[in-house]
Image (cartoon, rainbow, N blue to C red; front, side, top):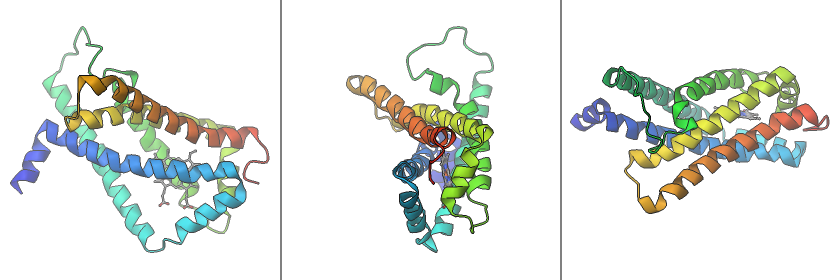
Length: 216
Ligand code: HEM
């Protein structure tokens, strides 16, 4: 009990929990991006993937509840850390050290996080809380063919890519995995992972918008 309290009350403990919950969400993103890539192979492959997913039966609500808990936990921790940082450093530094993860990703974490939250709510309303009589390929097609939604999805997934690029980097920092020899390759891996996720996901609304036969 004491250990749990200590972890929650220290800044580094919260950062470690942030990194652990972020890794779990990142794993889901990885599976989701691979799963959704089946849409590039045509309607039948995409529908077959969705069908296999639904055949997991009772595991689905368990997974959904876990996701919701971890996602909420990640957001609450982020807000607690933000408040802590503001309290500890009410005045912004005049000069910002460019090393130590000060990247576009790190500076925009709270904003990209906010965009992702709005994105997930709209996304679940679009694709999850729906009438299941319509094949999911048509739901995706009909939604993403609308320019407003296509742009919204592209902005959302690019924000996610930027968020991941810093999240991945800070995962190693939080667990003290750092060595001058590997710093630059870690930076590069983090940036490339975020970019890949953003680009692959954004290809789906782009194709829906530009290719009339997409998922037909
Ligand atoms: C272009 C990008 C995306 C597409 C086309 C897409 C597509 C889908 C589809 C079709 C489903 C419903 C699956 C089903 O029940 O049959 C789904 C569910 C879901 N998506 Fe996405 N997705 C995208 C991006 C994202 C992103 C970036 C996130 C998270 C940040 C996300 C989070 C979720 C979640 C949490 C669910 C609910 C999982 C469940 O039903 O158990 N998606 N997505």
